Every structure is written in C-alpha cells, then in structure tokens.
Image (cartoon, rainbow, N blue to C red; front, side):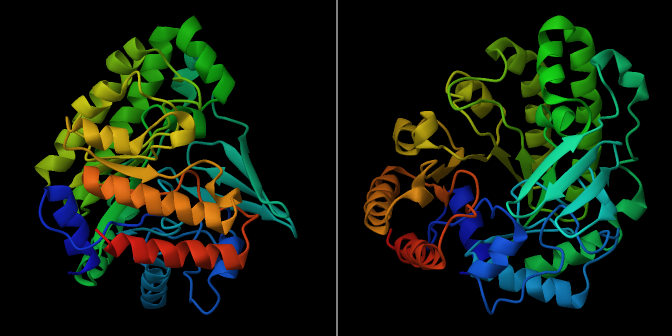
Length: 382
C-alpha cells in the first residue's frame, strides 16, 4: 500500500497496513533540520517566512522533491500543499492568512499578515508573538479588511502541486484558518477577544462569521483543486476546561464545523480538527459535526484516546495518545508508554499516533532517533 492508500483505508473502515504517524511539527525549522541531518528539507518549511516571501505559485521541482523527503523522514502519510505548509500543524498555504517579511536582523524578524497584524519571530530561544492587530475591539469590525478568498491568483499552480503529491502516493491536505481561533490569531488581541464573548456577544459572533465566510470560500477553492483533507487548527479548550461555554460552541462554532464537514464530504474529502485542551464537555457536539479526525487526545488534559475508542460510538478517528511531557521522559519510560499505548489502542479501534505540541527544542538527537525508530516499529505491529 502507498501511504495514501493506507490512511484512506483506515479512514474509510477498510483493511490497512500501519497505524499512521502524524507529528504535529517541530518547535522551529532549525531544530527540524538539526534532528534530520542528510535530509534535503524544503527551503519553505516553516509558515513564517525567513529568507523570502512565499509566492502565490506552484512549488518548484526542487521544493516538491524536498517536501517528499521531509515527509518520508517524519513518517507522515499526508503532504500539505502550499509554501511553508508542512511543518506546523494547521499553518501555511493559501487557505490560511499569509505573512510577508517586513524586516530581518540576526536574531529577529518582523512579518506582516494579510489581515494587517504583525508578528515578531525570534531565535535562541525560538519564540513568536503577534501584535498590532487591525481591530482593537469587536465593534470595529468594519475596519477589518480581508483578502479575496476567491482570487484565482491565490491558487496559481495549487492544483498541479496537489496532483503531483497525490500521484507520488500521499494523501493531500490543505490548512485552514480556525473558525474560533482565526479571529484571535490574525484580527484581535486574544484577551480582548475572550472578554468580548461576554461583553459584546453580537459583534463577537459577527467577527467569527466574517472569518467563517472567508474560510468556507477558501475551503471550496482548495477542494475544487483536488485536496483530500482539510486541516483545521481550532483550539477550543485549555488544559483544564473549555475556552467558551458549551452553548456558545453549539450556537456559534458548531454550525461552521458542520458546514465544513458537509462541504468536504461532498468532495469525497476528510476534515481533521485540531483542538488542544480538555473538550470532553463538548466532544459529543464536536462529533455531531461529522469531522473525520480529532487530535491531539492528550491524556495530560484528560482526553483519553483509548477510552474514546472503547466507547465505539463514533466513526471519527482520534489522532494523538501522547502525553504533554512525553519528550522530557527517559527513553525507558517513553518505550513503556508507547508499547502500552499501541497495544491497547490497536485492540480498541482505528487511530493515528500524534504528539501533543511538536518536537521540543530541548530534545536530543539520540532521544529523537529512539522515538522515531520505535514509532516505526510499533506502527506495523497491529
């Protein structure tokens, strides 16, 4: 089976050969390269451009080949199409708002988003933070100007790239702005946004709906160009609780998740929903939307992947099973944890392995190699 055939078989309820491994990414692109010496990585690996602005155009032949090498190195069965779209889960590509370079110095660069906000990206240690948002409050929504999600120039060469990676044997994906997270990533300060949900619900919902309309248009554009999986980064919880009430999720966010799932399924495609946090209170509502995958099921956040599988009440495939502090453990503890997880999860149902937040900058090459080799072994031992 090709990677594409394997992951599609798992998602469609057919026989499959291996448990898919889907790393959430790395703390930064320098770390990814350091841990994988000898692998020719894409020049545009990270969604935050560093050396050049990412074009609205097909990937170069060299970038395509290097994207395949990176995908093989991290054992992933899916390629996300677009410049800078393959390292950080849910980020990069034409269906997410795009950043360009404003200024660069030795240890820091400033980027500007299409929405108008800015981002500082620093190294040693790696860090980035958004600032200077286009609106200060939700009642300033009229000031928010978004790019045209239907502009054909935005998707120049995208269909050709999608066809290339599909024919190379990989499921093809596209990242999409979150319906809940998109506003505070690109439009308004996070704390102000959360307060507005309580202090100005009508205008907060209008902001969410404005992003929602943009997202649906962009999703349709990439699906029409052959994409097989929409990856939606839409954190709904913290480690202890939700970031909204169940009623707000049901009234404001769930309808968008349903629309996206219905649209994807009309195109014979899947939806992968990423949401950190303890979302147990709304998990039944999330499953009602028809999303095909949910991650990361971090046991540290009380999201038990094996228990979810054993409930047997949904076709949604969980991706995750890792622990927030897994990469800080000694190798013997990591081995015991992975061996037990794969044994119990394989007996309980269909699932994918995913970490909880990317490979951390503190990991050693020795430990990284150990984990990747052990995952390769366990993924085949159904």
